[in-house]
Image (cartoon, rainbow over the protein chains, first blue to last red):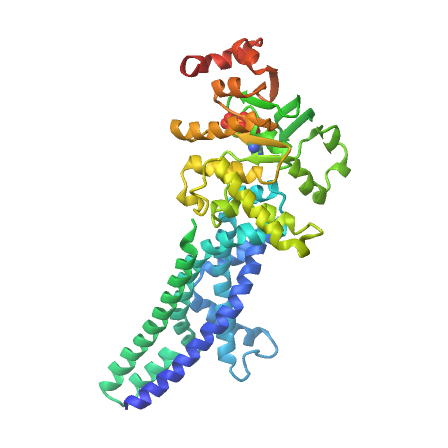
Amino acid sequence: MFATVLQALNEGFFETLKLFAVTLLGALPLGLIISFGSMSKFSPLRWLTHGIVWIIRGTPLMLQLIIIFYVPGYILPQNPWAVENGRFWAAAVAFIINYACYFSEIYRGGIQGVPVGQQEAGQVLGMTKTQIFFKVTLMQMVKRIVPPMSNEIITLVKDTAIARMIGWQELIYAGYAFMKGSHGYAGLYWPLLFTGLYYLLFNGLLTILFGRIEKKLSYFR
Amino acid sequence: MLEVKNISKKFGTTEVLKDINFTLEKGDALAIIGSSGSGKTTLLRCLNFLEKPNKGQILVDGKLIFDADDPSTQKENEIRRKRLHFGLVFQNFNLFPQYTAKENVMLASQLLAKEREDYKEKKKEILAEITAEAEDLLTQVGLSEKMDLYPHQLSGGQCKRVAIARALALHPEILCFDEPTSALDPELTGEVLKVIRSLAEKDTTMIIVTHEMAFARDVADKVVFMDEGVVVEEGPAHEVIENPKAERTRHFLARYSQEQM
Ligand SMILES: Nc1ncnc2c1ncn2[C@@H]1O[C@H](COP(=O)(O)OP(=O)(O)OP(=O)(O)O)[C@@H](O)[C@H]1O
Ligand SMILES: [Mg+2]
């Protein structure tokens, strides 16, 4: 009993990790691109990006997930998710878009949070724009971005559970399957306990990692 | 050595500088005084190419470095070089927080050194020279003990002095100070003024925006009084401050006379 549960949960956890990693890989760069859009001097682009970010941040991820998974099948001649791992990719796309919007706001805050005076000081000292970016402002942006980013990433770990809405088998799904099965009372509390432990352990590791990075950056203010 | 001719600057429709003219001789210190909002900071920012004047010219050593009517004097890549005629000590220092005092002073010199033709061959010597000079400058401003501290570990007065050393490191021909003593308590004010005084004794060419009238009178060779974007009066420091001719200057100075002099 114990071994079966553990194995199923491990598989579920692996799927959770996969969605987590793919979301980060997609959303971190996409968020940066969106943040440039939201700071653009070209106002139509700026308004468009602000609008998209507003919609994505203003509606539940669960709803976005359902829309992305079901709607293309109705409006496109061929359902793009009717492929191998289709549920996973649908979830990945929804998560990437959602998180990219959150990340873009974090990037924007970090970039705009560096006082203009820093750039002006660099200019007056005869530095080029590139030198100012890499030698002066970049570190200050990173320092501003890391704490809110770590919060958001820890939320992402827990949010992956939402993917089961479209029948994708991640960690909670794996745990839940046992509860519905014929394992009796033990089938209820073991999976619940272990699912919780997996999330806790993983987030514990992330917390330590981000704590280290923040500490590394704490030598200046 | 510096000629400022007919400089005007508008932000939107408000005219912040109206036809500013003055000259500055090599080795002289010029104090700019005037009430809040009269355009003193804007003038310094124009000299340092942080704002673009709508009208007028700036000449250094008889050479035209900026002409509002001549786009060929406003090329981005040349502006970077032209800026080096001037140094600017910002009112709020703008030190780089992620670098120590010494690194703040060295950074720009290190980057500029990379543009030298002999940089690759003599890299070590050049960098050693830059380090030695930074240490020397920080010692001159009384910070030999604080070189390896970060800006947040320094007092306001110490930050100001790091900012002065940082500006000096590039050997500007004209060093500009924007209210070097604002937001400092009297004790710290003293240490900063001492540094500027010693620069004046070494015949550094300087423009100092200040509210310290006694200091302006004693240290500056020349004083310019600005009001609402206009140069109302200019002349030798003692004359302008002790015997102002214009009514507006007299009125302005009257506010200071009781407390400071
Ligand atoms: N970027 C800007 N946009 C619009 N108006 C500005 C800008 N910078 C300055 N001004 C205006 O220009 C005027 C002059 O400002 P400036 O900072 O040059 O005055 P100042 O003489 O340095 O004053 P203070 O003694 O308070 O520092 C002010 O009325 C200010 O509001
Ligand atoms: Mg000012």
